[in-house]
Length: 366
Ligand SMILES: *Cc1c(COP(=O)(O)O)cnc(C)c1O
Image 1 (tube, rainbow, N blue to C red):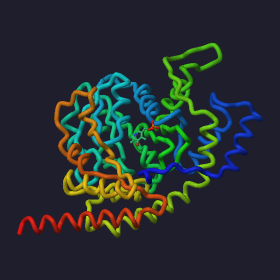
Image 2 (cartoon, rainbow, N blue to C red; image 1 turned 90 degrees about the vertical axis):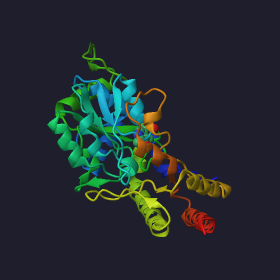
Image 3 (cartoon, rainbow, N blue to C red; image 1 turned 60 degrees about the vertical axis):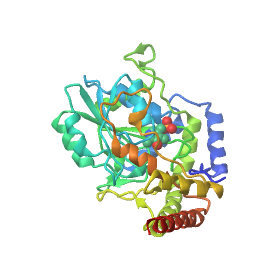
Image 4 (tube, protein in one colour; image 1 turned 90 degrees about the horizontal axis):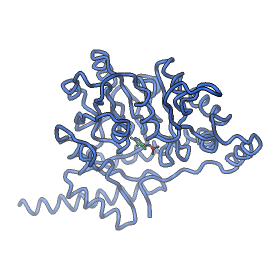
């Protein structure tokens, strides 16, 4: 079976060397030397400051909300993302208020944000979905006008620059998951980048149970630490991530060329570089999507409906409006694999399925 994502295993000998280091130092966790090294290398590689490594992406999002010092309870967010984008808000006892997405970029549509702002709004929480940059400038302008914080879920955007700077530089806080299925991973793990220096200092304490000195607890904290084995994996991955990106770029470009006329392809933000992390294709109808998915499955290839369900339909939220664009997209979208040299086969199956479909439609209408 070929799955949508394939977990990348970096050089084993190098990983062993780091594990030897861990055995020698006896330092497994609690901000150990490898975690510190990874944080430093990531800041250099990405060109960001105030980066903290954390246990996983979901924790990192929760962590971001825990750091918020604003009064309000409402967070304006996208309905089209992985479930954690919403669950983190709910877990932190805040209330998600959904603003529907743009049909072409699949990101939160800034036009829908402003009218949802109330005196209880504290933050805007978009996601750069499939690594496609949000309308960052517009969102920033709205946030400034209403004194709101912006927390980006940049989990898909490790390989993306916006206006010539890494995308994690934008927003008051920006979170990226390092889960094993992501383009850069630390088995489980994540990072947060925090714009404000004082908030970054506070974050280091919150990450460590709120402990600020050996016998002192300064504030309510949590355990959101990355451990040194995770960091060892990250250090190995960092040496190979450019190579992985390059391979994905080739797959991405191949799909774009060969499927362009057959399916809808995500419209990229003009101010940012192209992410090569995922290749989502959007079919004309749910029925057509299912036909394609079944045809691929018959050939032992899985294509997944990322993201379904639309987050406004989660059992623990009470949305005030139906998110039509998000629900419609989630019914017609498929993410296809970009590894294992399966691209030619996938593309061919999609094209033949759709050609057959359109023949049927023509016969039916004539
Ligand atoms: C993967 C992902 C997360 C969650 O990250 P974990 O590290 O798996 O907890 C959050 N948001 C998005 C958009 C993701 O793709």
